[in-house]
Length: 344
Image (cartoon, rainbow, N blue to C red; front, side, top):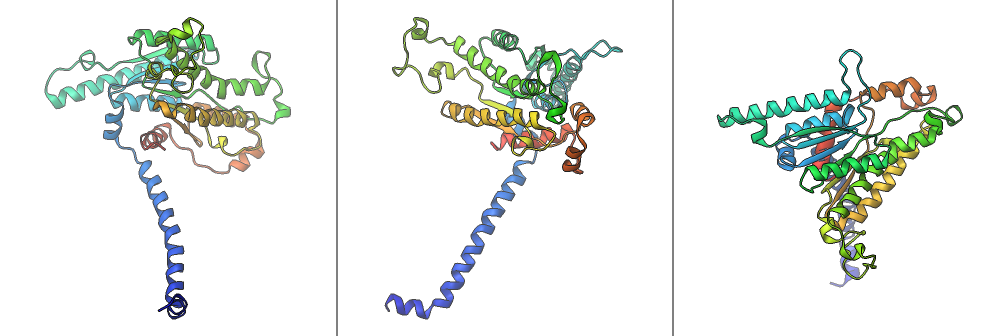
């Protein structure tokens, strides 16, 4: 039977098969994506504990909101946590800042975890014996030299090791029309202030990490002022030894407004789009060195920062936002951690 005869005889069956295949494959592909996303957002404490126990996690902007919730979740799973913040919001009644309060909560989590382990093993394990620790460090994230000094101190205190994970969570929206917010604090424009807070606060930390990684394993040829592009350098400006000093994960907190822009958030959008571009390029630079770079595109979270944002939000921006439900920082933390562990 030649092809033309075969085709004419089974034309109907072939057409049905093509239609079924054309419909089934997209449906299965879509179902695969939906199911993968669904399961990747499910928080699994055991998986988190296996991933972070004993690791050092550094969180900038970790004294409030989502950063604080994630710091507590990491500590519950056995991670050693360092939280960075300005620590200037002193409560008149207690004389303590939100950074102090967060450190107290982290210490309580570590103590409870130690007691839980002791109860399971029926032996007396202290926090020191379990070797878990938490720290809070005051730093101005907008000052590169200040951040660099703190990163150097962290490395020195940890036997020349940088954190295993670094989370850049400094940021905040101060919405308003461009024409109504021409100048901000310290004589800078509103746009400058928003870029500093939402972009440079993150790049200062990452570039300090990179600088200290290179200082921990200096290239002899660089010391002598010799061009080292002769095979000594590995990738992206690091020797293999320097690359081994880098964190294994770098995570940026961005926003849904890093993907789309909305009126009334012009300067904020600019900062978050900048973070997105920086993150995407950095991911490519560090991929070959085994460093995972991820970005969280967050929605509305019930935090003190969101309360302040609403006080400044133009009516049209609030209208466009609609009735988007708020999510608690604790719930968002677990959802985002699940995504991080799923390499999303």
